[in-house]
Length: 399
Image (cartoon, rainbow, N blue to C red):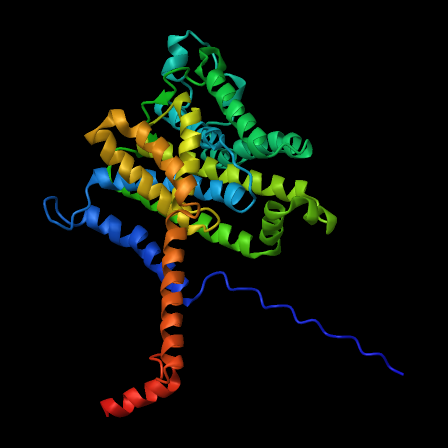
């Protein structure tokens, strides 16, 4: 007698973006790559449609911050590991780009001005690859990625988690900041790198270059969003969320959390390195203060305010918090840190889902009210507005 085996139908994989999602993505891409540059370069100053150079620079910085918030969301929102040291990876990407820009500003065979001031005779070993733009782009990803891989391997293998992991990431960032403050390390000490003039032979101080860097930052942000969405919708992302919710049960099912956590940790660090490399030519300076503990905490605040485990939430949070910071540091700079602290406490206690969570609750509340109204109408014997019969009656009445 032949035996029959039950067939198991697995759900189809979800598309990367729905029709509405791709439409919004295309609108954002056109806005970043075409409309904003046109409003800055083609619309004359004084016209209400003109986008000023200040706004182009400010939005370019915000988009770099949004990449960092997205990176934090991958490791915190989807994996449940709160990092308070991502400012280090952001700064490392910035330093790699800064070394290349300093070499261009000094000339191919000359030493950077701070080395001349310190009476150095030759470039230190860590500057040996900084003369090539292609190698610089490679190092922007490799340097933060290698440090994150080394640190993460030992931390995850030792099963350090929770608040202990947050503390040691903070300690790592603080130690790196103290190291970069020292003049003998060859990273410019307290002043860092500044005085950039050109990139690939083109001046950095032209409106076209400002717009180009703005557009590159926006395209990088959109690319990181798509990459993050693809990762989180794949089996890899589902295992990460299982690790976040029940790591012991995930191990019981045969998965090794170490490799999954280490991979997303390194990807997250690389994204921050990319953001730092795009940030430096736009602001014209990089120094050890970018590695401060406060900067890393701010990144976590952006993600929390926007909404963890939502991808779009951290982007909204980065723009909202930094927009508020830009306004408040001009209106009342002495109160900004207090506002930041209160914001983090308020979000943690009253808005665990952030801005996106509030929007989601509002939609669910509306749907519940609509369902309750329809149930009441059905109980009273009247057709609801959403029922097929009511729509037919309405069409008949309109006819």
